[in-house]
Image (cartoon, rainbow, N blue to C red):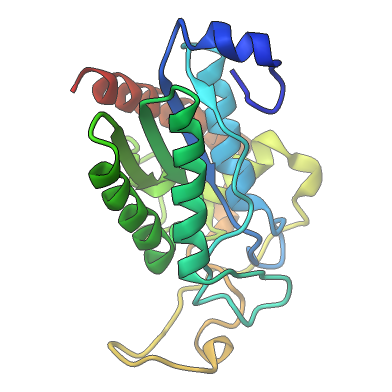
Length: 235
């Protein structure tokens, strides 16, 4: 049940079937020269839409803005503060809880470490605030895909996986490809000029992508997320 699309009476009826909601988080962030800025949001929301077709679960509208550190200087990237993301997560979950939802899966298509840490921190506080709430928090990359599906070791951003997914779901938005690339940030040192260490904004090899892989990735992610829904509901 997509909250975007259902009516108030449909929401009430939906509560008779489930008290679980998935909240997808994304970003507006560079994804190389070939993928749209909304890749993270598109990816995670597409998976959630597929899940809603198979099991009774609410799907919240995606949070389109995220905390982007490493890519903050790349053209087109929009970033919000960690405190903003944390409070936004708190407010969305609290509002849904007051309408009767009890089980929350906070899943992010954007896998930045500081980004997901803010979501997790909000989840921890919500657990203390509401004693009958259940929360899972993860990124899309935490869903363990079958070995060998993605060939590129360490692929994570605008590479083989994400390019395959967008090629499959939104082929009209893919503009060619980008060179294979991996960031070279100095270990333990925070840097101001992030573009110096990650010029093209790709982490992986988009040239190994295919629509077939994208279809398989989405199917596997859907199954893994459905498993998580069932685990959370029965824990």
